[in-house]
View 1 (cartoon, chains in turn green, brown):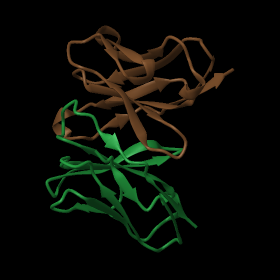
View 2 (cartoon, chains in turn brown, green; view 1 turned 60 degrees about the horizontal axis):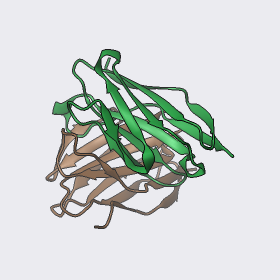
View 3 (tube, rainbow over the protein chains, first blue to last red; view 1 turned 135 degrees about the vertical axis):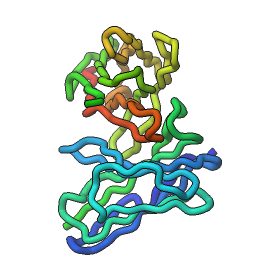
Length: 114
Length: 115
């Protein structure tokens, strides 16, 4: 079974631009979550989607948004990029939510904002 | 506040020595707990997960974790470190089971293995 696939692996953007990151979950997984990883703040939850509905949102500004499609693929968008948005963005999928069914992570998209 | 805490941001061990990584949680009820490992330029790989009722959980690559409710701990161990164990390790908890898959992560422990 193919794992979680995130594209692109690397992105360089300029302040003020917007960016879209893509995530394809493991086949059959309906829950997709996004996390931001930075050296200063560690791993922080962004949001979770299940069956195309956002179930949970972390403590991030409205510039961060996401969506999930009917095939469970997900995208996240960051508008009006700031230098502090530079981070590794990780997508994770799981069969169900709220259980000990583990999250399976992709290799991430490393975003650099200059 | 509910949280997951890892003691020690860096641990250095000799090859063949015991690896012990500490994780404590703060939660009104025992959460679902996990240990993940991250190698450079990669995502997180699941090492093991806590199963309700178990005290000792075995994972991949020779790792295991002991759950102690009285100490609210879920420490990770490996009897004999290998060079390939050099990585960053994260303890994570699903502290609010009604909140879907919102994992709370500890700050991570970077393991250095000396030959």
